[in-house]
Amino acid sequence: MGLNGLTTPLKSSRTLHDGLILTASGVIILLIALYMDAFEMLASWAATYEAWELDEVLFTVLVISVGIGIFTFRRWTDLNREVRMRILAEERLKLAIQGGELGIWDWDMATGKVTVHSITDAWNGDTFREEMIPAAEIETRVHPEDSPVLLQRMGEVTSKNEPFYESECRVPGKDGTWRWVHIRGKVMSRGEGGRPVRVAGILRDITDAKLAQDALAEANKKSTLLSSITRHDVINQICVIAAYAHFLSDELPASGQQGEYLRRILTATGAIQDQIAFMQDYRSMGAGSPVYCCVSTVVERAYQNASPCDIGITISTGTLEVFADPMFEKVFFNLVDNTIRHGDGATRIQVSFHEEGGTGVIVYEDDGAGIPISQKEKIFDRGFGRNSGLGLFLVREILGITGMTIRETGTEGKGVRFEVLVPAGKYRTDQD
Image (cartoon, rainbow, N blue to C red; front, side, top):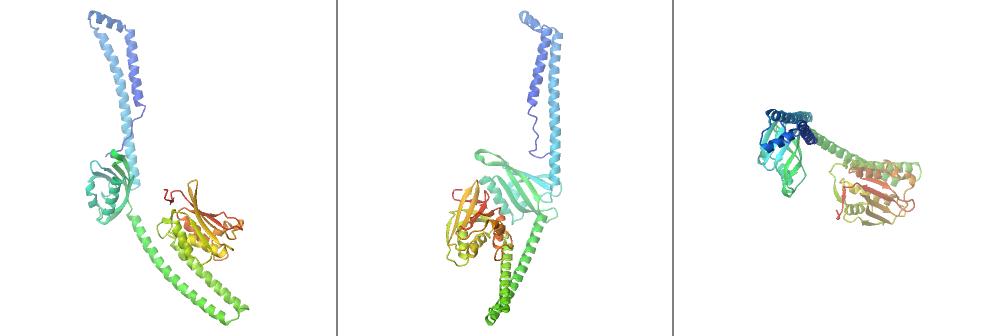
């Protein structure tokens, strides 16, 4: 069985070979004619209307036949080689498709036919066979809930000139169950006006992956619920401990050993509360799909949610949007909180944006005390710092989800300067 569209081109040098053979044959005939004085005989025949002798005619025909035979043999050799190469290429393609458990499809928009070669349980069972389906009938071959999305993606290829086609849908298997199939293709040729006329690609059975994904989502849902309940109960008990510790501090003298014990209890309960809050934030990372966020809006909201302070802020990022995790606001909340807690003497925060060699750079600055050179990398380590040491560690983790990085390039005594590096293709402005 042949696969539609599978061809192996002839060698580009074959035309040259054929030309050389014909030229060589002509030269041989010319030399023989000269040797036999054929030109003199031809001139004599033309003058006296006499015909060539039979032996000269037969010899000439014989020489021409030899040349044609050599030419035919070479053509047959090339064609035979081409057939073998096509058979070998087809066999390799078939083995690769079977090994990858894939199917292939070819959508000819001129005829409205979709040719499917499938080896999966989806559509055609588990044998490698060909089926030609009218495009208008595709809707009847998929699950009713999936057909609108499938038809929408098919329409986008034809109406919006989308280069790629990709979708997931359920199709009936030979055992009567619904099987999930991932379909991917590409526009292979276009007609007038750039409209696609042929789209081809692969289909792959992803039922097992879908089942595993659903099971994982359900397990994650239960784990999240249990974690939320446990965290809520622990926070309640911590609040009880902190409340009783405050009650005791009102009754006991601030000085002395007992007062020191109470201060340590309150410090420990505060640290536990910070750890629990960090656990909640860290668990939320990656829970939602990354989206484009307006940086100025995110920074303004983070600034408003931070502890009240007299530090002003200037945001000059314009309409910049970056592709980031939904927790992107936490990045600037922690940076502002870091300025409030550690930026001794800080009166102003500045957030700006510029580009460096195709990379976007979001700059966060304040005019506080700054960070010593020896600590510029350590501040991002988990547990480093005067408080919980989790804020800047969380910042780096959130940014890393979408490939962003952060570094500190400020000067000690002149304030901090955090630079968030955004990879090309993951930020956009009005100019884009």
